[in-house]
Length: 136
Image (cartoon, rainbow, N blue to C red; front, top):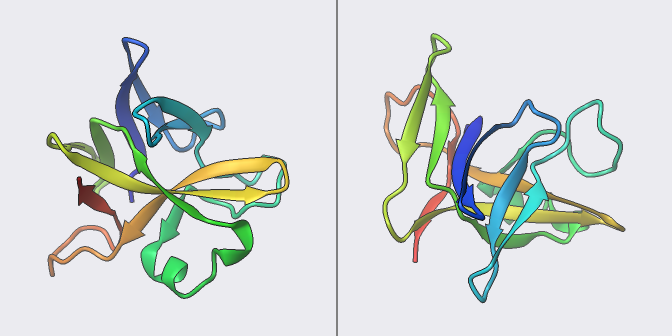
């Protein structure tokens, strides 16, 4: 489900994990610059946006995110982390031209980013959700 990401910003390598309440994800803007936005919302965080850090693609298509004015974005990450069924972390690199799709949600002045997830195509996948990886 993408529990962590690795990216570079301002010549600094960053590894961040969703449980960290100050976790931010790098959003690539139209003109190439990258900005950091808070990754989802946790129970202890103030706000009205959905709890968690992920948005199922089918729920986006079904309109469940419409009240938060969703905007699709590209996440400028080099790799992401998933845990297997035994709880071991595995990192998956993205290739040049690939990106993870994100969704910016808004409620008044609150703005957060969520990782868009899909059901894996592999029958024996260890996860029921996988980040949506797209190419330019």
